[in-house]
Amino acid sequence: MRAASAGPGGEPEARAEEPATPADPRTEAELRAARERAGVLAGELQALLGDRPSTVWTAGGAVRVSVRMRGPHGTDLAMSVLAILARADRYGHRKGLGREQLWLEIGGVPTEAHEW
Image (cartoon, rainbow, N blue to C red; front, side, top):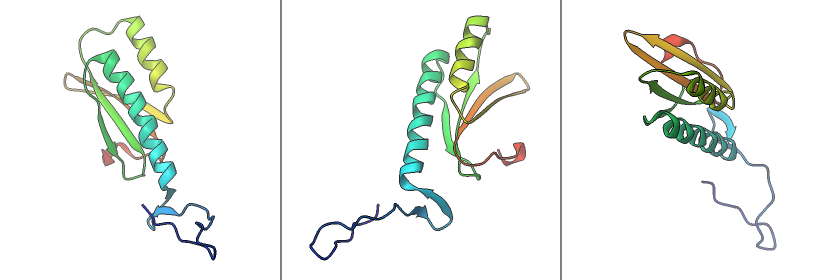
């Protein structure tokens, strides 16, 4: 958090919000909004699928939420999951060796699969 600087009359100076860090051009408000949006979607996925999603920051500055898919997948479940994923900036599905994983990203830039 940044301390507010006072103007000549002691009132806070009005200024545009600065980036969160010099290396990250997004403001603290943008980062907070991305975390909150990802948290809402993660909660909906958890309620629907029963597994707790993981939430991480990617190298591209996005918030990534991922969750394992377990058990049979019916049409109703698939449609409900897709409705949640569609509200993300990017989303996808990974499958390998008996595991299926859904992921979504909010903000930032897309990352390559090898960066996971």
